[in-house]
Amino acid sequence: MIPAPFDYVRPGSLAEACQELAADEDAKVIAGGQSLLPLLRLRLAYPSTLIDLARVPELHGVRDAGDHVFIGAMTTHDEVLHSDVVKSECPLVALATATVADPAVRHRGTFGGSLAHADPAGDLPAVAVALDMRLVARGPSGERVIPAAEFFVDYLETALAPGEILVGAQVPKLGPGWGFRYEKFHRTAQAWAIVGVAAAVRRANGAIEEARVGLTNMGTRPIRATAVEQAVRGVSATDSAAVRSAASHAADDTDPPADLHAQPDYRRHLAQVLTHRALLTAAAA
Ligand SMILES: Cc1cc2nc3c(=O)[nH]c(=O)nc-3n(C[C@H](O)[C@H](O)[C@H](O)COP(=O)(O)OP(=O)(O)OC[C@H]3O[C@@H](n4cnc5c(N)ncnc54)[C@H](O)[C@@H]3O)c2cc1C
Image 1 (spheres, protein in one colour):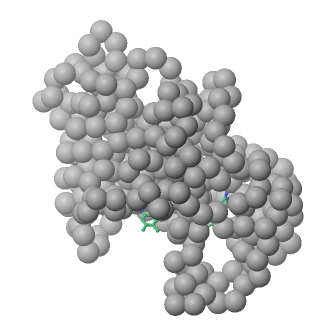
Image 2 (cartoon, rainbow, N blue to C red):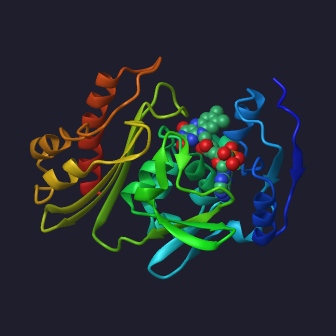
Image 3 (spheres, rainbow, N blue to C red):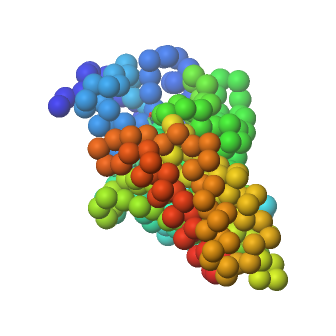
């Protein structure tokens, strides 16, 4: 299928990209194109202009910024996977990114594109809410920081205002004592999650002191499983039955979709099973 006609610009700086976006309300930015191009080809999106962010240097790369790691929006999934800083300081990002699609998609698709696209079946939004990432946006009125809990508004909808570009994410460093796991149930290898669970667990004296749990594809946006986080606090890190009991709250306050691959009941069951596995594995890591 052939997209509707559009103009194409490739700015060389963030200021220029913001100017282009502010000048045309029907323009759209393109990152890796892995989600946007299919939408254009199906004519579900028909922007007047595509603003290609590939050559905006401010959006590329990973850097250690003291209390957090900054991941630029245009950093590809593959670059994230090969970053030593990501591996050592925010391993949950690496674990989830390793499950995104296949190597070809990971070479084109970007970290920021996955967050800005806000597909609740995407693997990185759940990690963003679990880790309390802070999303940095630049627009006509300057730069602002949006907590992940406020960034994902609804299905494919974010808190980015018209004219705003996602610059990247500040990923807080959790420090020592934490273990991590991303559990993903998919129909075939390298496919989208039917359900996914991102877990970070802090242990002390053999018990789970704190847990953070984010759910993929359990609603119209990524969900923080706060009932599980509360129930698992203080539980022995090796007590499988007690962790299972806490994980039984994983489907609380969720609204999973029904599609060709799974009904909501099945997704609720999966969320509980995967949360149990993710917590136990993270607690043992
Ligand atoms: C076959 C296939 C399988 C896939 N499987 C998975 C999977 O298992 N798990 C998973 O998580 N993802 C999967 N994806 C999606 C992949 O992760 C994409 O990288 C991601 O969804 C979009 O990133 P992108 O850089 O390609 O963004 P694009 O497609 O270029 O853009 C997506 C949307 O985000 C907006 N956007 C992009 N960057 C910015 C920015 N900096 N600021 C503001 N808006 C921006 C665009 O305007 C557009 O609306 C798959 C994709 C394909 C094609």
